[in-house]
Image 1 (cartoon, rainbow, N blue to C red):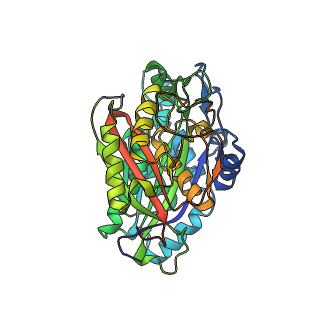
Image 2: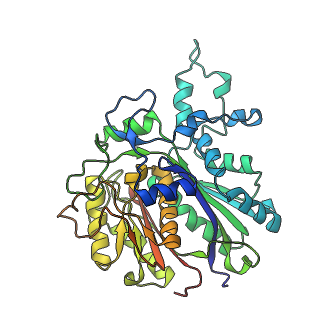
Image 3: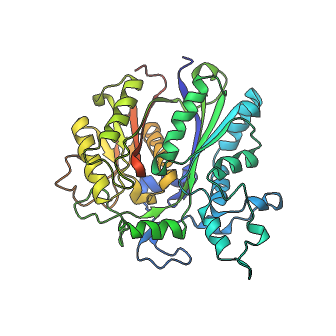
Amino acid sequence: MSPDQILIVDYDATCAAGSGMDELRAALATQRSGLRPNDFPGCNLPTWIGRVPAIDDYVFAPELAAWQSRNNALIALGLQQGTLQQSLAQLVGRFGSARIGVVMGSSTSSIDRSEEAYRHLDEQGQLPAEFLQENVLNPHAPGLFVAQLLGLDGPNMTVNTACSSSAKVFATGARWLRAGIVDAVLVGGADTLCQSVLYGFHSLQLVSESQCRPFDGARDGINLGEAAGFALLVRGDDAQGIEHTGIQLSGYGESSDAHHMSHPHPEGEGARLAIEQALAQAGLAPAQIDYINLHGTASRANDHIEGNLVGAMFLASTLASSTKGWTGHTLGAAGILESIFALEALTSGLVPGTLNLAQVDPEIAISMSAANQSADLTHVMSNSFGFGGNNACLIFSRAEVAA
């Protein structure tokens, strides 16, 4: 295999639709959504959320007590799923822990813990000792906690670019591998619900009181969710003897149009640039993309701009859907979670529909359905577009297929 080829060794995810790939595969196949009426403690907004109940039952081991936060609990739960840790152990045995990089993405890191700390100020207005957590109350907390939990001591980074964060981790991981900085990379993302997120998006008038309906003409906003996802990457020429998925990261594109703090560019120029970069790096034409997992938040602006952009760039026969009806918008974790949904489609041939879609908005020139479909896929794409004009596009392909 080529030294430039980036292979996916393993992946797994935890979100409202399921913990681990077995539960997620069942939820996708049966179209069982993880959304629920808002029951997040301390929040009375009339909306639906993608909450992961198992986080509330997670107990930190005594030696990890200083790392306590809802976000870190979700990271720990996510890393317990499937064969991730066995696959990582194989790579550590092969390369050594100092040659394993960690790249995490998040938009909130552990803001939840900050909120809790301020609810427990003492009589002098000071934080109690248990909340003096310098490694938790900072934006790099996800990367630091993963390294602590797994005993990894290679290069470590946390990307914070809003909703594109954990898509961009694949690009950073690939660059590290191709530059020879590391021999394997654990990429991931994690974001949890908190009051700052729920009330913050409500103040932007972006939160729906109903289950989200991406690309539907009657859509009226997003549902927020929480998730953690992870993938292990290696160079193709190092893959001999390593069990892997048979899938490669064949292209990525990143752009920052800086059009507005929260509104996407009206013609999707930054998104177009990211998609064009990913296609060029993969050596593919738009007609060769079989399925696109869209960012598809169910906001009026995102779906109108993304849908018309994709409809103009790709064939009408290209399969496309949003999976946020299963999970809610998981913000900084959306990039890796939806990349994993794309990887699953590539592996299984089951293409998820767009849950809750009754009729595509007539002002959006794109075709999609609510029903799942079956298809033989070779190249799939995942879009992630964040506040501030941060855009990322990823293309995954069957590893045996030359572009």
